[in-house]
Length: 217
View 1: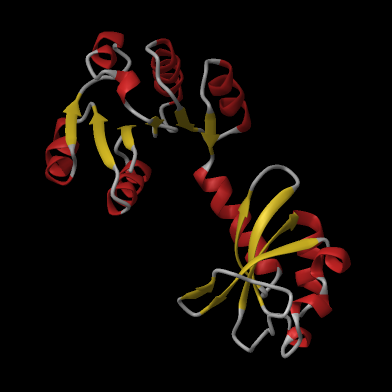
View 2 (view 1 turned 90 degrees about the horizontal axis):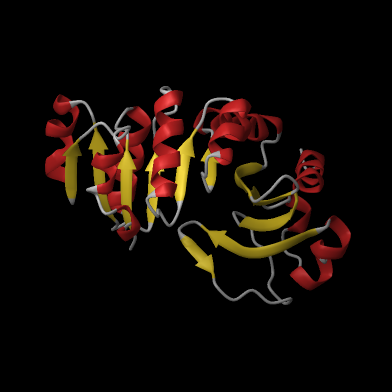
């Protein structure tokens, strides 16, 4: 469980806040719009009506006590920039800020953001990958080169052992686990025999894995 300060309760902030609550986190929400906070307050650990561009307002929240502070105001960039800088000045352990452009990311990183997210870009990239290969179910970018993918079992692997396929040397990817519906194979060894319906969770070079999945059409 983490202690989260979530600033900005637009559509993105509301969705993120609810997900964090569902995962058992303590979430304090802040927005300058009184009607928004009044509507959401009953669901949260704490809720505050405040203009976070005011450093005194932020200081009163005991910023260092939160595990992470999230600035979810990508559509108000000047506000996002100032709030991000003030959070770091006030001792925030980790600040994640929302951006809409690459130049916004550069400025947010420059004033102290530990991480900058692009929700619209992330969704577009994931959709493009899924549309490009029917075998890709989901994926997570780890950096510019490597990702974790969830892919459908290649038909030619069915009934064969992991050790015989040797995906690490042949295809440059490591199989982390296998999903069977809602069940996960927690301990995977070389003698595992792939079955119809298996979904593979694999790690490796993004470009290599995409080339592999495209060949499985």
